[in-house]
Length: 126
Image 1 (spheres, helix red, strand yellow):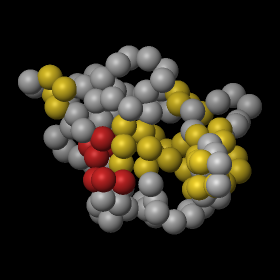
Image 2 (cartoon, rainbow, N blue to C red; image 1 turned 60 degrees about the horizontal axis):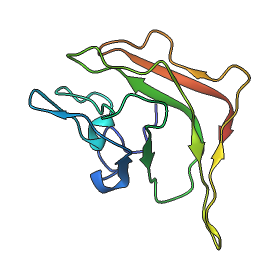
Image 3 (tube, rainbow, N blue to C red; image 1 turned 30 degrees about the horizontal axis):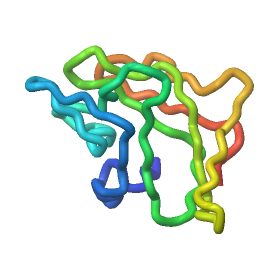
Image 4 (cartoon, rainbow, N blue to C red; image 1 turned 90 degrees about the vertical axis):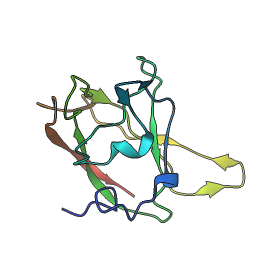
C-alpha cells in the first residue's frame, strides 16, 4: 500500500492542518497525530460537529484511490462517516474545492479503537 507519506512522515507536520484539536491534560491531540500507527494517540476534533476537518497538502497532484482511517489506540474516539473535499490546483480566483460523491456516502466499516479501515473510492480522485 502506497501511503503518500503519512506513515513514513515524508508529509511533514506543517502540511497537515485541522479545524480544531482536543487538548486536555491526559489527551493532547495534534493534527499530525492523524498519521496511521501512531502508538500514543490520534487527532481528535476539539468540537464535536460535522464542520470539523483535516487538510493534507501533498504539494503535488496525486491520484487517490482509498483512504485509511484508524481509531484512537487508547480511548473511544473514531469516525464512522466522512465527506471528502479536494482541490487539484489553486486558481486565479482562489482555491476551488470539489466534494467527492458516492451514492451512499463514505463509511468506515468496523473502525473502532485502534482498528484501521480502508475506504476505497469507486472512481479515483485526481
